Length: 336
Image (tube, rainbow, N blue to C red; front, side, top):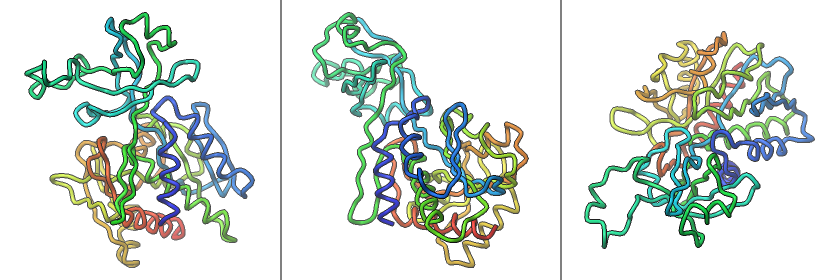
């Protein structure tokens, strides 16, 4: 378990909002250089690590996260943003950020409501949080747009939100972007285990990089694949059964039901092997499996993942959920 959490901490430290995933993909690729695996990348930068030229099973998870870009440099020297993915403004208010300019130079700042001082803004609590009244306060001596432009900051520069990673003595892992780096860490550790083993599965592991904007696994799945097992965070909230210390088997999300046979096989494996699991339905959710099916892949798709509290916000899961996800994924791979 410590290996999964350690790997998770390492990849969370690499900023990777959708559209800026080169660094994290290169890092993951580097973990497997020299090992007995087949590595390939798509034109748009996703990564496939496989133990077979023609894998029949592909395990997929996404490495891209929520984030933002500079939309406007305002007259007072603050930055208006445009969101990448479903970034919830009320949750990200007050978060520290890094702005990367086109030269690779980085500057710090904070994402705030405009006029954020309670001593002068009597409507601070009542103000609706929207892109129109929130901006980034740069940690630089800037007073106007020209001062900002002298830093080579421009429209389209990426904005990285701090993760605030913490691993508690009680086993909780707290961080932004556990969606879906928690599952990417599980995948990385499974690849390491199989690479060190004499027994190699007829499987591949696909790290997609555009899931948060809907087209992560629209390409890159080998034509040989008959099944796609998606690892992605499980929903916790009203009307759902997910728990932070269990793995969820999703039977349906907003795109429709997942494959009946795959879901039942996952359920049976979990029961027979005493995996702590729940089955669940996610009302406002789509996955890389949804994208692959929409793209026309003829694959049977299943979806599992660790329960994550406060998804797309200040997320939290427990080491038990990571462990159960790891074990169920491994059982499924070896059942094939």
